Image (cartoon, rainbow, N blue to C red):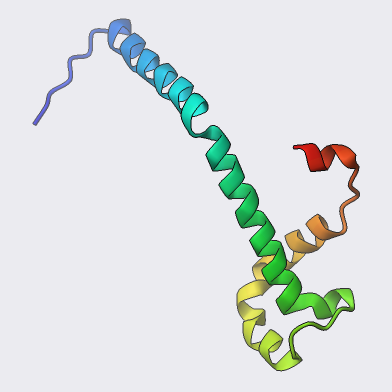
Length: 96
């Protein structure tokens, strides 16, 4: 449909300028929203893992029958979840 001319560096400069402009607009308009959405997703995943696999931490929230039904789907995330839960935290983690 559309043919692109390869004029050496000129085409790359325009693509680079477009990429830079796209990055600036992303940063100005939606970066805060995206990070807030990712943070909310992380908290919901922590809550889900805590409810379903709280037995591993010594806090039985959900009956073991349901935990065992969900276990095959949660196994790939257990190791990283444990690292996140047991990680040392300080007050600067709450800021960012």
